[in-house]
Image 1: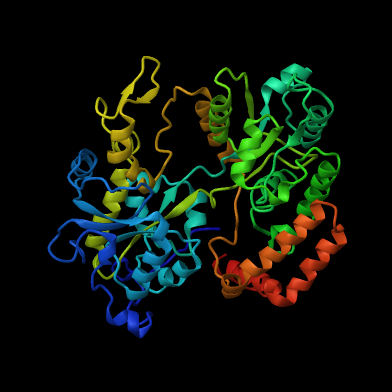
Image 2 (image 1 turned 90 degrees about the vertical axis):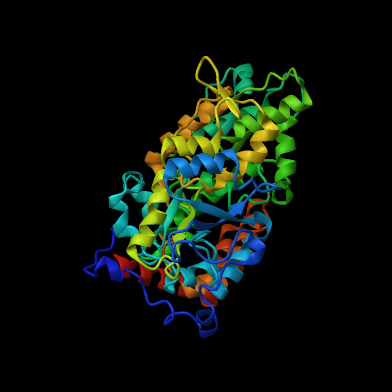
Length: 512
C-alpha cells in the first residue's frame, strides 16, 4: 500500500470534529478526561502550554510516582512537560470506550486500533492524521514502512504507531532430544515431520517414557497452527488472492494443504491427542514435564520453558533449538506476523485540545524524543546504579527487582517502540531469540485487511470465525472430512462472509 498524497494545507489536515461526531458526544467534547483515569482533566496544550496529558495503559498493580526518577528524567530529556493518566489494563476497553464516546479524551491517547469500537472515533475527526508530519522528526521518519502500512486506517494515519518486531514466531525443538537420537535440527516441514516421528518412536528422554512430537493447545487455529500454515504459503488472517480479492486465509488452498498435513500428524500421534481442549497453562506444564518436544510459538518462549523445567528439576539438562527458517516445498521462506504487522497500537493526538499544528508538534516532539536511546533506556531498565547495572560482558542485570517493578516497569508498555535497542541479556536464549526475531522482519507476512474497514467484519466476523474454528477442530481430530470443513465455509458465505470479502476488497481498491 502506498502513502496517500494530498494538496490540503497542513493547517487544515484535520477532519471536522463536531460535524462528524454524534450530537451527544459533540456536545461534551473536550470536557476533561475521566476522573477514574487519574490526573487532572483537560489539556495543558490548549491553555497556555502546560503539560501534555497522556492516557496510557497500566499493566502493573500500582502507578509510579509522578515526580519519580523516570518521569523527572524523561521530562528533562524530551524537553516536553507531560503527565500520564493511567488506565488499568483490566478495565481499558470500558474506560477507553467511555472516553471516546464522550469525547473527553486526553491530549494523547494510547489506542488499540484492532478494537472495533476505536475505529469509528479514529475516523470521526477526534484525532490528527499525522503522516505528512513524520518526515520532520528523525526517529518518526525512520519508522518501518511496513508498520506504517499496518497502522493506517483506510489510508489515513491517525497517530504514531507503537512499534514491535514484525514477527516473533518460530519453532522450538528439544535440542537435547535431537542429540540423544542423533538427529539434526530441522529446517523444512518434511524434516520437522521426521523429527516428530522419531520422538514418538524413539526414547528421546532416555527414560523409556512415551512422548509426542508437537504440544499444541485449544487456540491452535488462531495461534500455533496459523503460524505453521504460513510455511505452506498461507497469509496473516486475510490475504490478497490472485483475482485481486481480500479473502480470509482460512479459506485458501495453502491453509487447507497445511490442515491436511497437520491432520496426518495427529493421526500418527505426532501431536498431543487432546490438544483441542488444552489450556495454555496446561500446554506449558506438559512441555516442562517432557511430554513433547516441538512447539510452534514465540521464539522468546524458550527462556520461559527453561525456567519452568528448572523449577521442576534444578539440575535439568533441557536444551532448546530456536528455529526461524522453516520452509516447505517451493514456497519461499516466510513467517506470518503475530504482532499485527509490528503495530502495537497508536499514540493518537486529540484535535480538540491540540488545536493548532504547533500544539500537535509538541506531541510529535515528545513521541520522537521518546524514541531516543536514553529515553528507551529509562523506560526499559531505569537508572543505572539505581535499577540496573552493566556486567563486564555488556549484559544488563536488574539489581533491585522490587524497585524496578515499582518505578520502571509501568512505563514499558508506553514506549513508542520496544526495539530501539536490544540489550544483551545474561540469558543466552533471550539473546538468540532477539537475533532471530530481528531476522524475521525480512520474511514477515502481514494482513492487508488490518488497515481497512468492513462494517460486516466488525459485526459478524467473531461469529464466522468461531464456526470455522469449530470446523477446524472437528477435522483435526478425525470427526469430519475436508469436504465438511469446506461446506461450513460455503454455508457462511451468505451469513456475512461474502460481504466481508466484498467490503474489504472495495476498501483495498479505494486506497490503492
